[in-house]
Image (cartoon, rainbow, N blue to C red; front, side, top):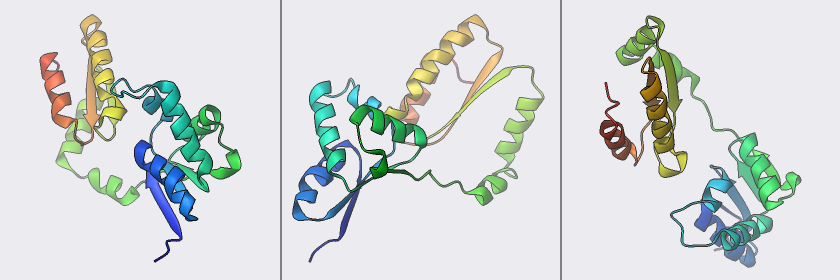
Length: 178
């Protein structure tokens, strides 16, 4: 069986796809969902910055097409990895409008809406996938510093993911929970 196209996402899988799979004459599409600079600067990695950048760049240069989930990510790929702009395309994450409309009827959403507009507090709101690369821990650390100087503010984090309980524990350790 011969495959026509291989599509991948993620640093290591993109490397395999862009470097090895391409060698078999299969078209290669790499997708990038997060800022590549986060991967390059990752403190959890044992691979050096220069080596990682070379491997990532090699992968993307070999790709037939590169798909970014935002214009910002596309720009970073072009600037940092020197990928040809004609090879890149942005396909934004879809937004489910009907789901958002349905959430307006949710009792929890109504309570948040009421609390926000009946309060004189300043509200910080962040939504996203609760994963390491989204750096919600930095947001919580930053909010703690703000809250220590002015407790007339709230932070609401909307999302789910593998870091949820670590973030809850961080919030509790700072005594920031309601």
